[in-house]
Image (cartoon, rainbow, N blue to C red; front, side):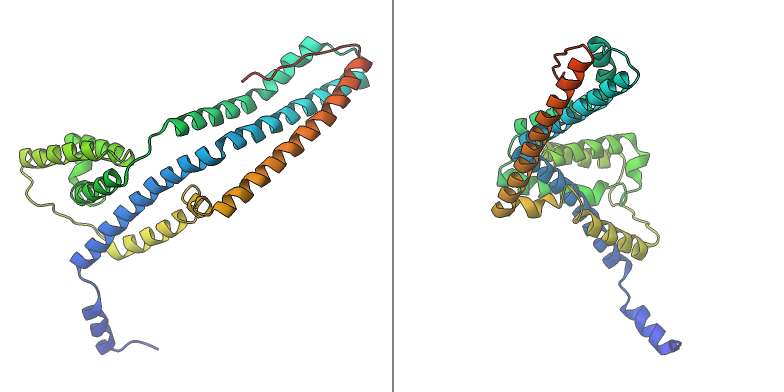
Length: 272
């Protein structure tokens, strides 16, 4: 059924004006950045809660992989009627395990950084958020087209983002003064905003935000806010760790038998 001219006119009248659409767009952009920031906070909290167990589970897992590769190497040598050269096997397996050891180092490095991170007090957090909102409305590249064109403004925006993610309210206060000085130097009194397809942009942002809040690391929030879920997660990870350890013992026995059959012994230490 086609809409009448009257219905179309009513829709046009009720349609949000450009200022209202721009305000909604600004709020969504700020909301998106807040989700990114909160997601990083959740990621750090998750690592502090589960990081050590995660590293232990992964370490046990790659030990099982190392043992299975060693067993496969020995079986292949025995099938060919050859003796097992322990040093050659160790060298070959070490190369194959390099990417796993690199992943483990990355996990341990993330754990270290997370535990060294400072906790932000509520006052600084709220103040940083308030200042950022003011600055984002002036300087966000999706709102102010001059930001990406003027090197000084772009540099200030990058510094603002760094300070915002660190909840550094004092630094943001300093940057706000510098932004106002830069605007004065560039002769900018008001920001001219000319964004096409605002309604489409708003819809796209709403969809993106919806996906972000249901994705890792933001989704960690639901887990971390529930003590029962946290304990259940730790129990699950501990169970997995013990299973890997038991499996490793079984693999070690198989490997020892094969090494003896192949006339070789080997002592192996995981290189971390």
